[in-house]
Figure (cartoon, rainbow, N blue to C red):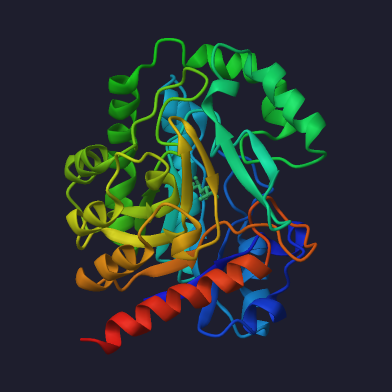
Length: 354
Ligand code: DNO
């Protein structure tokens, strides 16, 4: 297992590489050229700069999170082959720099969604939280505008201004896309991309939907154990893998996360590990990684990873905002650093007992 931290490059992240370097056991980062819109081929020079930056600070690039999939591919519009070609070009370029793990998701329009990015907790920290009732039956534009007003400049992926400006147009291309159609489009994409990945030694790791149920009426197809199994089986290849995100899957209490991990033995290339606190149906808030702070059994989760011989890249996932830190929502240094050490603690204790 290789421990990493997500880093948004020096353009966007206040967390610095020297800071990351001082977290015990963290061998590298997972990152991306976040400023590039989906569909653009990543320029070689920018990838080289990113690699040089990391090397100078003694950190490895352990994965790309993410190469985002263009909505034309997800919705299966006429121009999808053009965007698939570009996607493959980017993958090939990345492989020239030794990248062998790429995370992606197949959520229409938006990436992960929360309804509050700074919910105060009793201890004075704030967390990301979600209440489905705030999203139902409403116009996404209006809701997002309200949230952005309330929460200053905070944005989540998929909430960028350029995208919000053409939200209507984006919703229109998904008008006739149900779960089956979206799944077919994913399989079409995988059939094109996976052979190329095999050739250059890249593992593609699909990220579960977050939250794992439909949002704004858009279909979701990576919600639980059977969805993941179906995707893995659709294209049988060592390059067709999963990002096991405990927090995304775990926000649905029906998902038994340790058992999902066990069922995906050999297919998990990337692990995002965090806790989440279930509040009520469709309502959750993120918590500290520490088991008793949330609803997930973190010990059983880490044990499941050890039991299946997981040897991929792991990262602590979202943290609380603590000690007055401001950061990319969910991605401060302090609480994720604490989280990484908690995960190491569990991992080492489990290994020691073998
Ligand atoms: C949220 C992240 C996601 C993830 C993408 C993968 O914190 O886990 O944004 O990076 O869904 O493509």
